[in-house]
Amino acid sequence: MEKIRIGIFGFGKTGKIIANEFLHDNLFTLEWVVRKGYEDHRKYASRLLGHECDAGEIFSIGDIDDNFFDTRPIDALIDFSGLTGLYLYEKAASAGIPIISAISQYEKEELDLLQSFAESAPVLYSPNITLGINVLLVAAQILQKIAPHADIEIVEEHFKGKKEVSGTAKKIAKALNLNVKEHLHSIRVGGIVGRHEIIFGMPNQTIRLLHESISRAAFGQGAIFAAKFLLGQPPGLYTMETVIADMFRKNIPVY
Ligand SMILES: NC(=O)C1=CN([C@@H]2O[C@H](COP(=O)(O)OP(=O)(O)OC[C@H]3O[C@@H](n4cnc5c(N)ncnc54)[C@H](O)[C@@H]3O)[C@@H](O)[C@H]2O)C=CC1
Ligand SMILES: O=C(O)C1=N[C@H](C(=O)O)C[C@H](O)C1
Image (cartoon, rainbow, N blue to C red):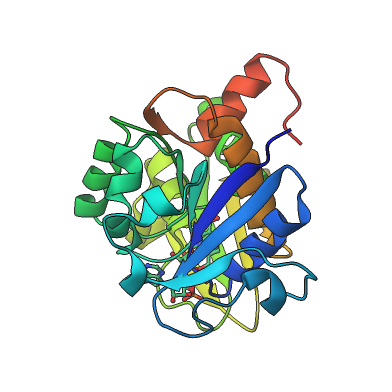
């Protein structure tokens, strides 16, 4: 059976782990990786990650020209780069290539552009692509309906170097109609990969919904799940929580 060809934007803390997860999954073949600079240019991500094969040739954003996606065809594009990565793959979207954007902090301009990609390609956008956090998101909205008068606070914890507020936490706050400035608390310590807790406070009891990303491989497994789902879908904008909620309704196990 033909393998699913993957191209990844971003080869940083998370992109490297994502590449490794796809390299370990025989359903996929890693065609290329694009990074900002020219470090390890035209080497193979597979070799840098310790694999005995040549896969995932490394390109720089400077290599992205009008022919890049024609000469290096893929079946799905995975973006773990940064705010501006999506400006480089408009041609891929126009060609109908499925896109998984995992960028956690988009401004309105980028969100509008991503929405426009969804007119010609299936696009899944997820600021946190772990299966667990998206189950938490659905569960929190259900719990809020059950206990509409509960006090709710969100605590997000990440590694010391993460400058921005968690995009995941902002998405949870928006889903629960909470004011980010008042009800979202950020902690930056050590090497925490990602921890999100939603605390529901009631007079005589507290309910805590907690998700911890123990390894960045969780994001890789989420990206693999998303890629398998997206292939064959019609153009449109998809989210992990809607996919998971739909599978729940159809009694299809997610994990
Ligand atoms: N949706 C999710 O589940 C997750 C999302 N993220 C998000 O993924 C992004 C990357 O996270 P990290 O790997 O920790 O950051 P990082 O800073 O370690 O790596 C970013 C990588 O992207 C590259 N890059 C930057 N701009 C680019 C562009 N325009 N085109 C191509 N490559 C570009 C850089 O060279 C670097 O290789 C962040 O937005 C982060 O919030 C991270 C983890 C999980
Ligand atoms: O920067 C990260 O690492 C992560 N960013 C995302 C966020 O901002 O929500 C998701 C995850 O928590 C890890």
